[in-house]
Image (tube, rainbow, N blue to C red; front, side, top):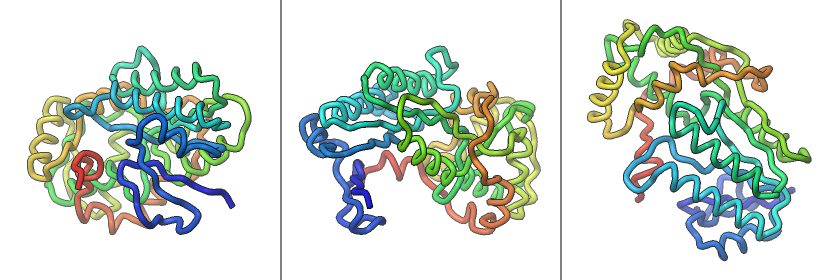
Length: 279
């Protein structure tokens, strides 16, 4: 058995893993972070933000990752496994992807043995994207798909990402691996799968990106959340959400939807509530 320390902004007195895990604050200063990580063999870094909001920026997120990497070095952590994003690059078309590439560069310069995992679009229990897509399809008579809907998406289940992360954590040397599911779908087909799984009769219509964004903002006013960003539309339409490597995931979106579709979209999953509105 291994001891697990869960670094989080909201430490818990009891942990879902029971006595095998404890929570500690990720907001601690550099000295405390290093003490917390003392004796840790492998650090899994999943820290990130989906979009910028007020003082919470991509630059801030990169610096938080830098602090974790520095604390890991000071504590003698053997290996860091970092959750990045597919096709992260310094010249990517959106700041999200460029910032993810900046963290990969920090790791490369750290001198710490590391593995980088680059997921595509994720789905699974607790998912925001697929759940809120289902929520919308259940309630609206029509759903606007930005552009022609032909751009590809390659969804990967979070269990497949977790399994890959554990394998990469047990490796030696520096590696970068894409985490991608077994199917590449046109975004039209992605949305249609979710619509059919929840029994929706919503009409799927192609609209300009600005119209899809405007509709998302209206929905956002109702649910008090950020539904979709301009950058996310760019990332989809640019074909960034697919891998050129062989798939590492096994769970097919269609199979998962067949099992879980009835529960999807019954309530809204709020990004702001989860990550920005502190209790």
